[in-house]
Length: 311
Image (cartoon, rainbow, N blue to C red; front, side, top):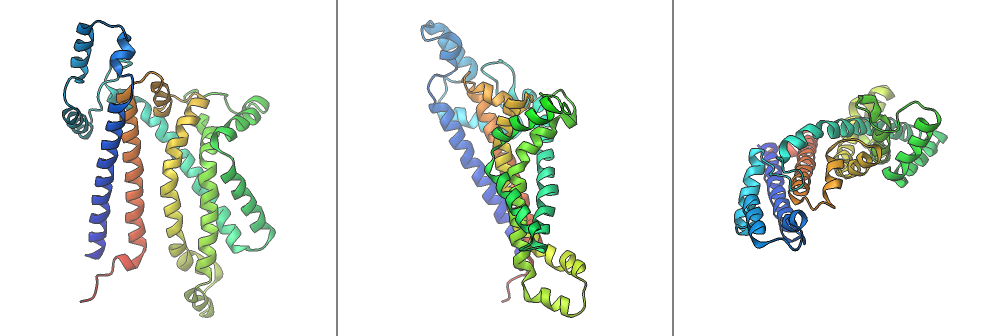
């Protein structure tokens, strides 16, 4: 019962947060200078054309009515119409979204497959050269941003070794370099958190008790320490989703990946506010949804959240 209440509270908080973000996103777009009328018709357009265009996009209605129509459409899957392309935004993003998802999944897999073993090796060999090497590697990964690392990777693997193409050409493996650049910082954070979490867990009394009863070191780590040590790592992965969503915009632009980040960046100078609002709220929904799943999994792994309070 307590765990179910925990899930309901987290869901309610996620919905409230998403609604608040929708209000902020819509308000910023409504208050931004230079609307679509000025962009499309120019500052010296005749009043009849201005009125016709405002009516076409619904800009002649009060702001609460515009927001209600916009958010209700978002809930139904109607993300509005692009000012720049004069086309529905939903189909345009659905065409590009799988590419961004591929990039994010590949970067996330890289972060877990590289960061977790690196942190575990550092924890099991604390104070040794393995620990120092892992710590230095993690510090380097945190310090170099994706927009700096990606050109270096392209210079080495694409231009010098010619192992990968310079830009994205449609194949999954073409995302290798952008995924490494995007996932390097999350991998470093996962490694550091894994090391710290396992060091703390391995020092607990129940670990020493398990060892005193004759349980092997490997089984002790896998069956007793891992379940508790992985909980803080999940939190790091959840927060890293926001970094990968924001970083994918830069990485997609640099590597020529036709994802939602590329179209979002190009929509800013064109003042295509519906496109910017749709992408912003969609990214926020993904970020909130992933962190909601992490919170639920966190509660599932932590028995204290599943124990009903005693009367």
